[in-house]
Image (cartoon, rainbow, N blue to C red; front, side, top):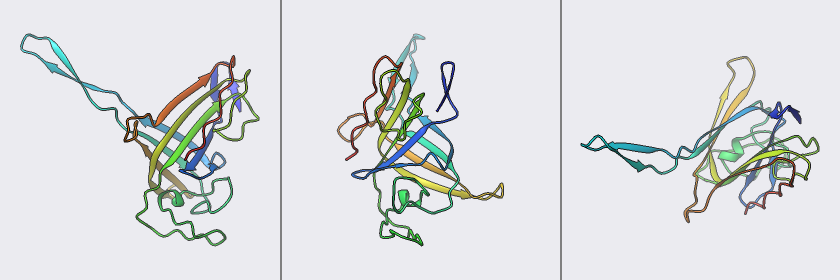
Length: 194
C-alpha cells in the first residue's frame, strides 16, 4: 500500500463477511467506493422571543456505494470476491460452474470492513495491524446489500453495489466503529462476525 506524506492513497482493503461466515476480499475487482450518511442532525425551532431550541433527530443510516468490474455474477467459493449478486440473493446451492443465483426473499446480514494502512503485508481489512504501522479502519456490521446495478455505458461491464447499515442494532448497540493507530500501538484484529 502506498502512503504519501501523511495520507493514505491509491490502495485500500475491503472485506465483506456474511453473518456467521468467512471474510471475502474484494479489492481486486473494486475501482472505488464511497461511504455516506450517518448524519446526527437536528432541527432548530424558532421561539416567539427570537430564541432557538434544538430538536435532535435520530442518526441516519450509513450507505456504502461500491463500483466494481466483475466477470462473474457471484462468489461461490473461496476468499476472493468475484461478483455481488449472491450478497443480495442468498442462494448458495451453486458451488461450481456455471453459477446461477435466482432472485429470493432472503435478507442476510453482512459486515463490511475497510482498512487503509502503510503495512504492505496486509491481506485482509479485518487482520491486526502491528505496532510501527499506521492504519485507519471502519467497521460496519448488521447491514444489508440493497442493490446491484449493472451497466455497459462505457462498453465495459461495470456494477454499482449499495450496502446500507443502521447506526445501531435493536438493543441500541453500535453497528459502526471507527478505529485508527498512528503507529505507536497495534490495531487489534476485528472479531469474528457471528
